[in-house]
Structures are given as structure tokens and as C-alpha cells.
Length: 145
Length: 343
Ligand code: SF4
Ligand code: SF4
Ligand code: FES
Image 1 (tube, rainbow over the protein chains, first blue to last red):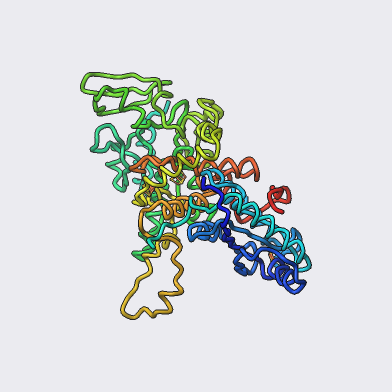
Image 2 (cartoon, helix red, strand yellow):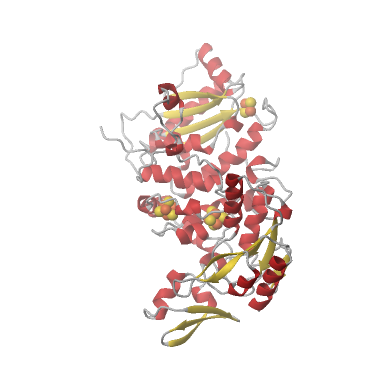
């Protein structure tokens, strides 16, 4: 495992459902809530559209942590997208843990469009947790400088 | 105990009466004791069929090949293909049927029960034969009998049986048109997922130490994908190479074509490949073990499949290859699915 570094700023890739968590992140912004700027948001139409390959690919391309966030159970605009995502993400997470990736590098949350404060809290906690783990170098592609 | 003559007679009859246009089974190969897949269309060749502990190929793969070949040739011949299928192979056929890959009437399942045994693992056998190369293998009760130049060698089947057979929960083809041998479901040679659990008992660091080496070893020959009946997609997500770049390919086409994975056999790319493979087989892999057997560098691929299989079973109550009509693992959900990991 890599040593925690004082000046380490984790890179987080955040897959945010456009109907809820993405709007929630907007609300956090317009409400001027302070939270770390480490997350790169990628808007997705629904958590159900997140392929496990997105997550593997994010780690492959250098993410230190990956967040998937969508509508609360029962609130998915496609009715069952987040139920399907819950299953797929559980499997993906278990597989990543199985080969020895730190469980705290992957996170999933339900954040509605009204939960700006919750979004800020989820990101803050996640960044803290990933910072403790240091850079993710297990799945990262090695590229020559 | 299965009498091979019964299988031969059935095959000959079916071909002679036109009840099957081909019988896919096993025959004696040219490499020592190993059986090999046989594609029989002439009733006179039905006597070539064999059934022994080296019949490890999952022949449902060739149903997929047949379907692809016919589509390519634009042919639509009448009559089903009869196929010899062990328990795991028959479950693969069920998955293919569940996914509407072909119709039930297109395949005639000649089920064979593994009874008290299973197939041999050559890697376990080799050290026990003192360098002798066996020319034949046979079932005999709880033993396997190998014929070598030095005479017959009798070994307890469970000593040289493939791990997946030791752990097999259902060594019997539940879905079949005809079945040979007795149903010995419930025989407990080893607890299901035993190897997986031994591995999982280690901490994350140890697991990574082991897997990082496996990932380093993989050379991306794609044998594991080629041998799997469930890897039937015409275009695989890991093959960006199948995107033909011609003089007419625009820069935009090149730029927007997502390249999920590089062709280079480096650790990071191998991880992406093998993990994606395991995900795509979750709820579909029936643990026939062919991928692991085909791997030239001993990547314990089954363990990834088994991990998904056990999660599916324990968390979602899902059993791959159990029913033709049911939904697939990731196209369905239950209210009781675990969600405690979500904040
Ligand atoms: S895991 Fe083994 S069989 Fe599969 S691509 Fe890698 S080397 Fe080939
Ligand atoms: S993944 Fe391997 S064990 Fe599973 S069905 Fe495919 S070849 Fe068989
Ligand atoms: S629409 Fe937000 S999770 Fe489905």
C-alpha cells in the first residue's frame, strides 16, 4: 500500500445522475457550501446506466476513488434504474475488494436534488477517506512520462 | 455407471432417422489419453463416441459456433443438434436458452451424469504418474483407471479430479432430453466454494499480492474468452482493435470510438480485461472450468467467477443456469438486495 502523503490531493471521479445527485451538486454550489474540489463530476442519465466498466476504466485511467451517486430508492426517473445499479455496483465492489483494492476507494450514495448539504458531506467524507489511503496505484495504467 | 454403447446407439439412431442433423460428443483424440470434441453427421461414425474422465470440454461452445457459422453461411438447416452435456455444460445451455441465443427445439440434450466422479485435472495427475504418459483413462466406481506403458494405474478419483468437480453442487444435467447415468446430486466431495473461501480468508494485502502476480502473468491470449460458451458477442468490448481504421475513417470516428482497454498485456490492462470478463459472466458462468483449464499461464480465473457466483447466490438468491424462463442476474432486482453499503 502506498504511504499517505501530506501534499496528496486525491482524484475522485464522480458519476452523478443528472436528475438528482448532479442537481444536488449544483445546489451545494449555489448554496455556497464549502467542500473539497477533488471530485470530477461526470453526468450520467441514471445510475442504472453505469457500467462496471466505467468504474474499472476510471481506476485504470488514474482515479484514486470512484463515486457513484443517484436518486433515492423509489425516486429513480426510470423507475428501477437505481435498483439495478444497486445490484451491479454491489457485485463490482465485491470483485474489487476481492482482488485486494481498498474498500474505501469505491463509494455509492443516494443524493436527491434537494440534498446539497448531503452531497457536500458525501464528497468531504470520501475525499478524507481516500486521502488516508494515498494514491491508487494498483489498477492505474503506467504511462511513460 | 454409463454404458457408452447406449450413447452411441442413441446417436446412430438419431442421425439415421434424421432426428438430429449432427451429434456433438467426444471421441478419442490424438494426444495421449485426451478425448476431443467430435462432430458426427454420419451414423457409421457414432461408434467413435467415448465417455471418460478426460471429457472436459464444454460442448455447448460448439452450439454457439454452429449458430454463428450458419448465420454466416445464411443457411437454415432443419433439425436439432444433439449434444452430449455434463451437468455444468447443460447449465450453460440453459443460460444460452435463457438469453434466447437459440431455441429449445434447436438443441437435443444428451445429458450425462458425472455420478460419483467428474473430469480429471491433468495438472494434478502428472506428478502421480512418475512421468508416464497415459494412453487412456476410464471411470471405475470411485476410481479413475489410467493405462500407461507400464500397465494400469488406479487412482482415487478425488485425488486427481478437477477442483470444480470436487466442488460441484449438481453433477447432473437437470435440463435434458435424454439422460445417461444416475442422478448423484448432493454427493459432497468438497464443500462448494471451498477454494474460494480458503483464499478469501487472507487479508487484502495478501490477496492483492497473489492477484497482482496473476494479472502480471496473463498474456491476453484470450483463450479464456474463446473457450467460454457465454462469451458469444460478435464484438467484444475489450477489442477496440476490431474497429477497422481505413483511409475513409474520419478523425471524429477515431476520436469518439471509446477505447476501454489497450491491447498491451500489461498489469493494468489485464486487470480491466479479467475483471470485466468476470462481471460480464456474473450470473451466467456455470463453472464448467474451461477458462481456467485453457489458460496457458495458470491464472485462477475460476476464482473470480466463483466469487460472483457466490455473491449472486448468497445475496440475491440467484443460481446461474437454473431455469430457462427466469430473468438474468443483472436485469432483475429484489427489494431485499443489500444496500447498506450505500450512503
Ligand atoms: S487469463 Fe489466461 S487464458 Fe485468459 S487471456 Fe490471460 S493468459 Fe490467456
Ligand atoms: S467463465 Fe469459464 S467456467 Fe464459466 S462458463 Fe465460461 S468457460 Fe465455463
Ligand atoms: S434517474 Fe437518478 S438513479 Fe435513475
